Length: 316
Image (tube, rainbow, N blue to C red; front, top):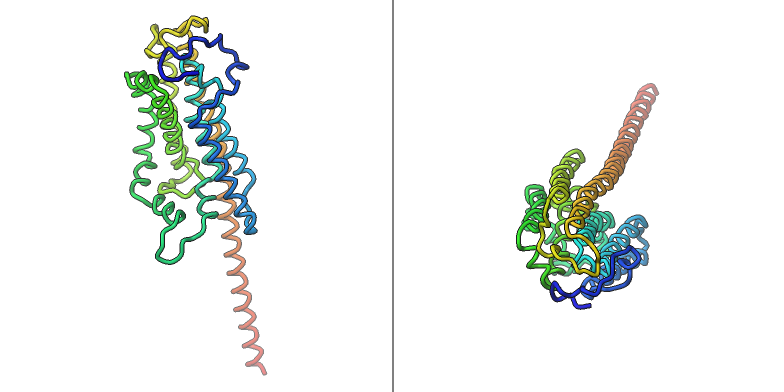
């Protein structure tokens, strides 16, 4: 199926979930997904061969995260998403709010840092370059809440309510660039909040929750704005192919409903993950304190025994 312009999907029959989930791979995303899975598997195998453990939960989270990208970009959902606002919104919500969370919980950067060999003194290999990037000023800027929250909000309003969206949807390259942008925005937004990987910004757990809730109301409002509009707002979806048998305005209302409802999904997911991370960090801190107390107790006991021994020697 040709994706090179607006008239490319005239032959699409009415949308059903069964049709939407049929295989129809976008070569760019198929290659990226397979490469991501292969590199992750290589890292895990390398650690195992060395005798190091890697949590199974992280592997599952990463794999499912990549598969969610494949689900929206390598099936006919991608074809329908070019002409149906509601299907496009499902793609957008999954790739910007579900896939990034799952991928980040898979800790791919931590895996890379542990699996890549050190280059040796004075030399720079992939591991050293990755560490330089993590500690760079660029990374500090793009993961700072003052940058990520406005970017997250602007990605909705500035894109859908300006001619930029129609321009990007007019070509296959533009469409791919937009989807990559959605994924990247999701990653930089959720990384400081939920990421397991080391990053320049690691605020306290309460601050992370505030960051999460700072972006979500704007997201919900965007959905409500679409639902309440009395005319189709996006040129691309104004005249859906007759073969689909849909009305542009009711499809836009459905798209708004999806955007509004979806803002709750990551909030719950992230909140649960944050609470688990918080609990885990409290447990680790308690264990460290216990170990320190045990060491202090041992020292006190040794000092007391030494004192008794000196008394005993004096008595003799």
